[in-house]
Image (cartoon, rainbow, N blue to C red; front, side, top):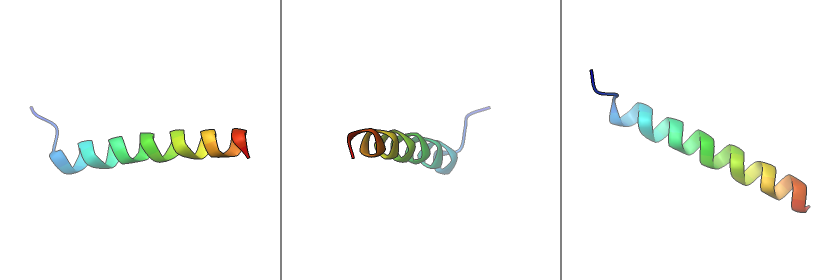
Length: 28
């Protein structure tokens, strides 16, 4: 079974958003 492209996009977006948030919080 192949994962849905939408799920992959949401997952990647979530990881990227969380990573950016952590970096921003740490720097700021």
